[in-house]
Image (cartoon, rainbow, N blue to C red; front, side, top):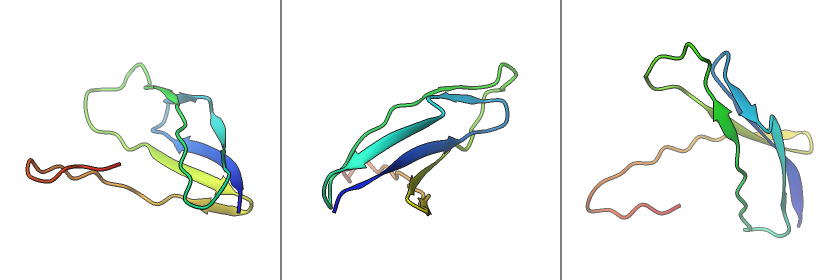
Length: 79
């Protein structure tokens, strides 16, 4: 069945995302979609690694499973 909802990013303090939230729609089970955000770090951000979390809200349920990409020369990465 069709599902629709909103995507939101949780960013480090002082960072901004445009749009702040983005709507999405999945017409049928198994469908995929892509949503683009423009993320701007705070001016005082030093070089380093920072956590950006994405969450999808569908009705009253929020989904925020994590994904970590592992890369090995002998294994092809699929997305």
